[in-house]
Length: 154
Image (tube, rainbow, N blue to C red):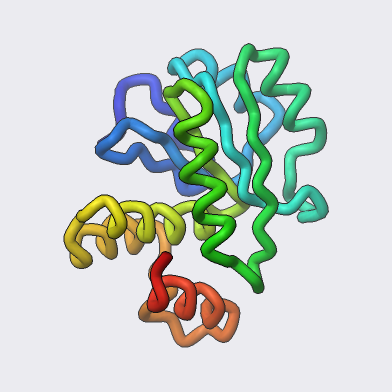
């Protein structure tokens, strides 16, 4: 559901039906591109220590006039508290919002849970998540903590 002008060359770019955009890692020129499409708040679920993390992300976003909320989520240890922090961040700041991590895996898994909590039927929530990845059907051991989180719900 991309819109004209969406920077869909950003890794795993997605535009949700609610208008929130999501993606993987951002590059130095991306804050200006996000501002150009109207984004006013960015939530980052990646760890600062990740080798692909955008250095000085908060400053680059501020220079583009975008509010910033970091919620560092260890890929091997996501928790319901992290999901609640995302939900709170989305209500605490005016949108439009953009939520990202490194691959858009954390983001899509968290939105699966938020969508389910909002009453979206499971197949529809799963389809949105699976457009990027589906830890519920992955045999990769790195997906195990995500499967547990998604199966336990929030």
